[in-house]
Image (cartoon, rainbow, N blue to C red; front, side):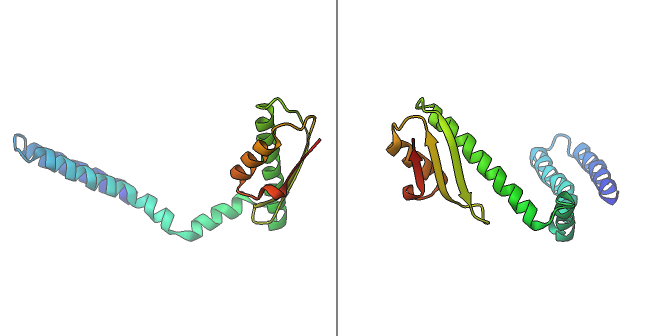
Length: 147
């Protein structure tokens, strides 16, 4: 509430100063500076909350409430694997290749270690391996495409 009072007082003060410098050549510069000062006043509450790490930690812990770390990471792995399946299926559909099965191995850090893909046709395997390895930043030897 103190921030709101400071902003209101600042606005009244700048309006008064603006009226006093009505036809001055410095009026645009004065408005520019008061605008910057007003923005800095408005940013003070936000910077307070961002600098207070306890509030951020508390917010994260309430967001993950009821889940221990292992189940959270397992859920994250499953989500990553489902995203991989969707992205690879979309890529293969551009080459008119139907994906039958995709299995991927993701470590605790979220890095993809290996991808096995079963398709109905073996076409453009080199292009597809290169595209997948570039997209996921992994070695082509860790990508297996089979029929």
